[in-house]
Length: 119
Length: 108
Image (tube, rainbow over all chains, first blue to last red; front, side, top):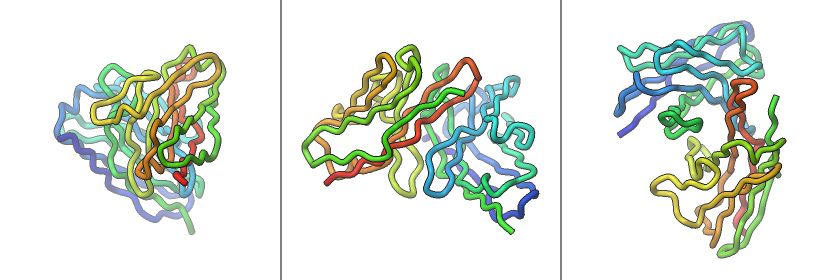
């Protein structure tokens, strides 16, 4: 069974940093592209970042480029999101999402980890 | 950047048909995917590549895509279909994934 479990969320002050993790199991993690998607309270889904299966290709949404860094450790079956210079508008539930093989949609999602940026 | 526009809400009586539009410039030239999200839960894929249903998704869910509008159709609507629905595409010009603004489906 495919499982994606996010962790690392919490309360952080504006300008602070946070590192999110996503532990993957039930599939060959190193063969799949992965993404982070977020959802602000009461708002819609917003794609945040993409990383290829080997980590050689990375994309970011304009809203986080230069502040967030996506990475992965295939030996540990884990995906990460380093978030720096956090702003109030980064407050959201952050989901880890697997990209279907050679497709451009998300076939499995984690349950999300909440991030609150507030003083 | 590419924008996908959905109506904020759609209301439908049980047993009737709900149609959820997703508007985008020449969206008919892109592949559109649809997700269902119930309160407090992660999104679930209900339609991929305009009109492909993943395993486990009822035949009542279907999609179409042409011109500037893609549409998710839910036939014989049930109370359990009440949820938020999002369209999504890959925008190759910006290397960005794009989600629609989302539509809340209310079953009367």
